[in-house]
Length: 305
Image (cartoon, rainbow, N blue to C red; front, side):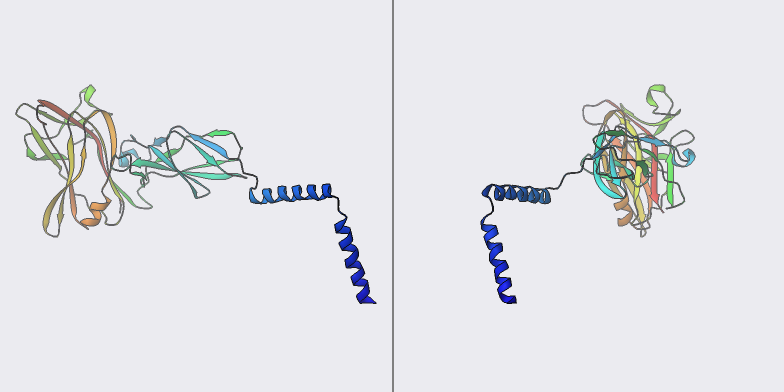
């Protein structure tokens, strides 16, 4: 009897399915289709936009790190320590957030003055910014950076701003680098450095009188503000394993306005481990040019110790 009862129930279920209205069946299919689409294409989150038009570099210990002139061109943005991307300034950063979180902003530069080599600059602090999400709206923020302090991690600074002295001396050529306080020749402060080529003074090669001990396998940069009527070369002379070795670092083109360049020395420190480094500025008058000046300010060597 139990077996017959089961068969009767199955038979009645089959009859019920066969009697379903075609219209009802059609609407069921539509509902199932919509459910499938929602599973495949879930509702998209709406971002909050953080707008960064500019940045600020503020002094930490001016006597240590010198000028706060900068050329921060990009920002690397993290949300709760997850990288969102690198953005050229000015920029609008989309952030998918559902609750209050923190933005970390790292300053980006052109490595060796090249727009194709954009990197995070290790000697500026990280800007942090806490915000509550406000989807579709724009939150404006100006990141603020400082030079890293000289304690943790240990950072070494050497600065020549020509306000007190002049670290450059003549190495060869017809002249040397002198100090100038002419109003139209000074970038900031009272003094800048000048190489003046003309007439029979057609070349100059000046070198730092101090030696620098750069730590191998740690980041190291030269910062330099300059304006120039003619091209010049930045070189290094290294005393390494009992020999002096000279090598070009970078060639810089003429600039009619003061500009900032960050020169990466990390590779040289690794190649000449524990060498004693000096740095050279070298130039000569190009053909058919009778007069050319090079102005220098805020020469810095910065490295992790």
